[in-house]
Image (tube, rainbow, N blue to C red):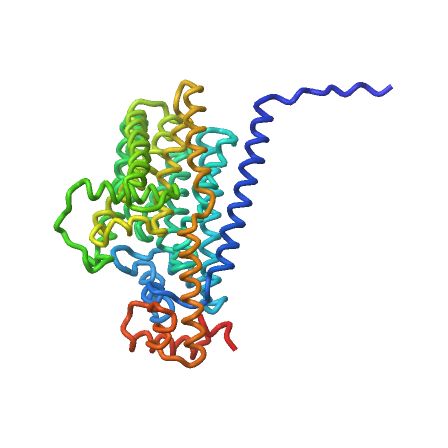
Length: 454
């Protein structure tokens, strides 16, 4: 007789982990597929608005890779964005639809690394991790994907900051510092990843104070890393010129409450609460309060914790602090346009990092009953962001129709002014003569709108 096979019962932990993986995987696949579907439906093969300007770094002018990397457009540099475009875009003849699909892929990749980060910090995938694809794959980020797609403004900073936090989880100090410093330098020069440069020296200092001051060899690594981090931040400003993103910008500050309302409306929009009235401001202020509590608790715990716990709190503090630096600077720079501009889609990627950091911090809360309650509240609030609001769907459709109309008009022989009038919107901010020369160049080289025209 064959020996009986022993059947071992499946543990609750294994079942919870399997359920978490299934739920996470379902949300990830569905939300990623939705982003690609929206891109397929609403992206149009024609450069739009800022794309005519920042593509001077790669397509319309000839520059070295270093010059592309350091190219300044408005208040930030383009960094890794032009390098990725220079590598990929020639194969697609600078097709704007292809670029939008690349932007989507970068965001989806960032969401995958965010899950890996959570697993490295807390050791398992849980049901609650459905929050990660909800935050990272939000349809609210549509502007940075297929309206005015710019890899350097939104998608790449989202990926780079996530990778930067992953680098901090590496156990070997030399490898960790090398990757942290490399990612810090690239991120500083890529869009509004700049703000990470102000946080890295602080993180290095706290790491030294908490973990390294009794280790002679580690002290040398810290000193070198701090010097490199400060030099990286200083290098950003070498050759930098002040270029406000809006013409109405002024150093004359408004009342602090105006800036608070602006930031609150930014976060309200992330949670799909539209408008500039009292209710959106209230919701936004509640989100700000959540993030502030997270930041204070994480910083306090960083200063008095073991190594693993320190990393958990450091990551949460970094993500929330970075998001706050971006949102406050945006309020200072754009308040002059009016509060309604606070709900721009292009801010979503930067706000998502703060929400993700606050979500991660919930796993550090004790007792476990309170932690589960807070996680449940966070998930319910995030689930409300999954449906696409009519306002966002309307803007997707409107800008898609504008670009299709302008492209059809111009390919049919219309002038720039005629096509601006036919579309009801200018295709770009540049003078007519400059835009005409760029359109002639695209026609001569069969790029962009001419790459798929008969």
